[in-house]
Image (tube, rainbow, N blue to C red; front, side, top):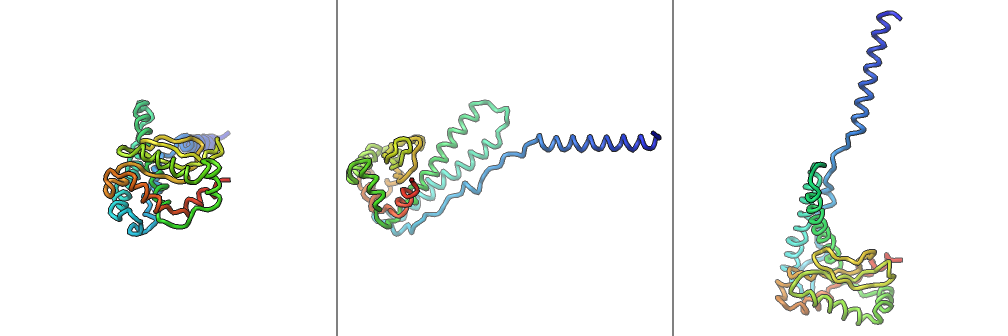
Amino acid sequence: MERRDFMALSAATLASGLTAATAADTVSTPAPRAVQGELLVAKPLPFDPKSLDGISKKMIVSHHDNNYAGAVKRSRAIEEKIVALSSSANPFEFGALKREQMVALNSMILHEYYFDALGAAGTMNSKLKSMLESSFRTVGEWENEFKKIALSLSGGSGWVFLVYNERLKRLENVWSWDHMHSLWDSKIILALDMYEHSYQMDFGSNAKGYLDAFFKNINWNVVNTRIGAIA
């Protein structure tokens, strides 16, 4: 082989090696994690805030703009901190942030279930009525249990849910505190916020008055759609 051909072959081999190394580096270096900000945006109220019966525009707007939107902002800020953590960070740093993320994300999601089912529209359909009767004997017994659970949380904080539990194959009322309690394998049908910020401005300590107003303002069309999604 002539020296000129040998030099050309060596250069080609070197270039090929560099290209392969560059390609390997590209494959082995993952892209930085991104904050999914487009999924962490507060939704507007799905009804006219002046239209609720017994719940003031001032209170419902404050609830939405401060408590719900605040949870959305916290969710985004916490996710940014998690994404920015070094892989060498201490386990407790990950654990503490993930717990706070769960609180904030659950607050965001549960408030959306709550607001989406307000607006006083429609009536309870036959499927929901039949499932309530199958699970609680009568619609009245379901409502009584739901309200009693809610009153047990008055003066404090928490949520009450009507859920469909896939494991038990029935509707259940669920007590929840700190956005952190759930009956696993369940789908939310109706959510009631019992944190004081949801009623104190209008009702003071009269949680029963708030419960009565909540039931007058349920959007049964939304609740019927949720129950309709269950096989």
